[in-house]
Image (cartoon, rainbow, N blue to C red):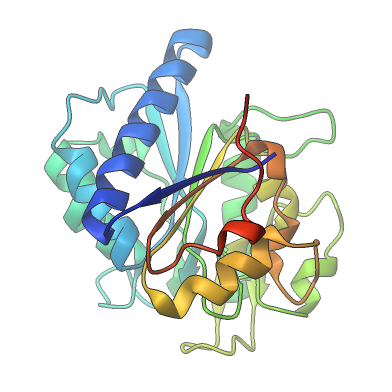
Length: 245
């Protein structure tokens, strides 16, 4: 069952998310000696990263990956890597050797292939040879997309062994992107999805309803999903998962 937490405002969402991420990374380090986290772009994750950088989290044993990337250079203002570098990686002093950037400048296919190889060589694998990340931080679009997996897109039907995919016709600019596959998102030990603002309320409600290709976020594994929203993005009480006992 999905764990849903509602907060009064966006700042409280970021505070809560930073604490959850730090706790899960620490658990992974304690259990397996290292941790693997994938980051996303966006305003709410960006503030979460700023707060996470200010904690006492130990990054020397954490590999940092990305859930998706736009096919732009690393220094481009649209780059998810640039956001993470400015808000978390630099301020927290994450060792550069532990940071694995999606090379958007290579283009969708070459960039996806290169990233898939890096993930499968470095991250632990499940029985189906999919990388198993400890934590994936996700946002959600008003259309219910996560990472760069959009409603009804062919990427949702990729081979179950696919690790990373090229996106050529994103409905949001820029049209070319790289994304982790749905299989990798579902294989993760934990996904943390953040949503703030009234524009996300319908998407959050749809995500918590029946799984549907028209709402990619609804295809995540519910038992491994933590959703943290502010009051504006929160679903009505009738649409919320039952509290855990």
